[in-house]
Image 1: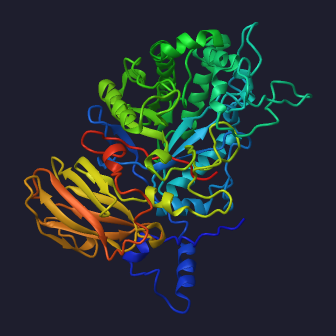
Image 2: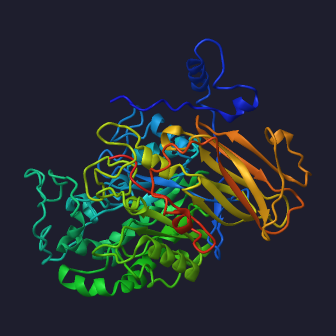
Image 3: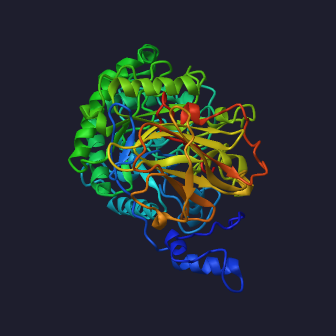
Length: 584
């Protein structure tokens, strides 16, 4: 189907600095803008590489030594062809130009790209890799840099493998004992997998479909045994998994927009059979310490053979409740400056007792205990939406395939109509400091007043510069123009500030606060830039807000939630990440 939403026009900021205005021209102004922007779509953006995290405060830093904050979505095409549509918009299965422009307008800057082991290594051994598939994925990731997107390369799995109504590992990586029960025994009451009689049970089920109760399949005997085989290197399966990661690192090394590598999504407990599951579940920390930690060390070591810069994202046992990684004694490879604790929040529920606030508090605690960064890489947007809850919410960009972990609801783009949902767009496009030269102490957004407050301090040498990504779109509730409202010192003293047209008017030796607004890469997306001046000392409190706003659409989200204070970033909870379904 064609895209039913208003066209998002591509705008090269360099054109505006040279005098081009996409809203002016001769004849049909809109058509003039489209023609001109189409001509410059090949303009390349080069993103500064992310080099490390501060092992003590958990901040991400780029090669310009700026603190970076990331917001984004997950994309995972879990079964064949393992790639989204890239040529045309589709409400369910595309990641094409229109999709990239929407992310740009939302000011999202990172994609958690789920890659299935089965897609990369369909056959066992060093000659079993699909190099053509890897080349296509690499090219796609390279294209995303032009759209301003960083990427986390993630090994995704749900229920270990497609054979078990899930996704992830190739069928040859499934191990079993002589007495392992056929899938899904002993689980009853759920849809049983049906296989092609000519291909047998090693093929993918013919009745793959999403069900909200898919997670109960984790306690089937075959699934628990498959994880046990991976963790214990049964029949050399872990050796192959390590080799798979070496191939991924070899493929993506040297790419500026690749932040790093997430070893495995939601690893399950180590239980040789369903009979062993209850004890394994009660002692989940043992899986962290005795199985995941040594496997993560092996994966980190092979990645470092190819990529010395990329960060290693690592997860605790899935559904770990109040534990959330207590079993780990160090980060992968014992390199906290190159490690990021990746965790999820869907609780409270039957297997996870933590609310989002308590999960974040625990996640920050674990990262501080072991050192390194932290990122909330999946979360339940229905919880954030407060009383106006969706029935269920998943985590990825689109559904792409009706399999476990890919629900057909809670998406940013309506899967039936293709319409961008205004409330979700508003949630994801709220302003935030995407880059800060200096120390970022904290930030919080007030939904009632539409004001963003940023606390920052200058670096040891040079000016402090705060870059705030904002969106101006009346349909999403951002009506008006974002502007600097106030700057004050730690003691509350307000300091005057001057707006300049652009950076070319900035006196680099000036002592006062200067600010300006730059058009970003699509219409409606802008950057508010604030330079504190060379004589500034100590912390500064900066407030930006909407001028000329009528309040239209401001009630899409409940006023009582000041979300950023809890799960984006503040002085007590420094945290990156903002993930949810993109489409069905």
